[in-house]
Picture (cartoon, rainbow, N blue to C red):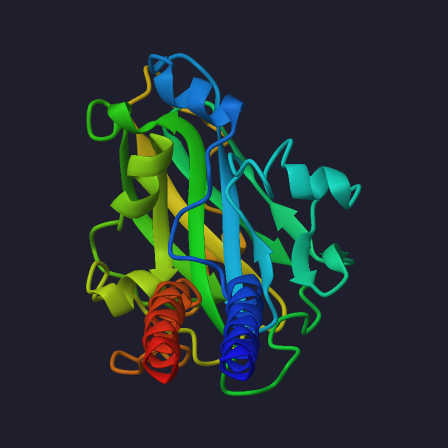
Length: 290
């Protein structure tokens, strides 16, 4: 019986270790926990004469190069993981999560926008210098490109409207649906307005079926351009740049039927069930052999 128990203990230990490794390597299917500042912004009444901000968001599966939501309590402004790594969310770079923790992708230049009235704004990243897709394998792909703001979600459509969203990779426009996609999985959690240019996770779930897939990785720049209305005045400086306006439209970087694997599709829960089932079966076997 002791021998059997030792075998059971060894099996359970191995499964527990596998579960721990998997949980660490594959993030769970939940949106970022909202910081205190994010919760405060979400509860605030929208000010049609106020100033708000739009932040560029990105995630590449495989390399885990990213720029999370500003309100993430771990990787956003005042994020705990950012503080541990002595990094600043708005230092103008993308970041990467690896065995050494969170590091900055030096040289990349992230552009955010200050929303000060109705107009067209642009966020994005330039000087990529081939920083993305550094693994060079089939599991590495851009999975999310989005814009997160400090505008309360309660203001969406009344009075704030987001329209004419454009996605440009290396200056080439990627075809997007006519209506912006607002991922409820994130906006319900944060209470803040966010819209996605592309999101392979939401596409796999059927929530954003028309999301484009980035099949040719941008080597230099990514931009998301959008128009905001609902403020009491126009912002004369919020206009499309000449470079954006002259960008050629191309679908070369997109595919409508390619499926992508989801970083947020975590096998953690099934593994927990397996561990529990194995434990129960093992106990039954031991009892029978007693």
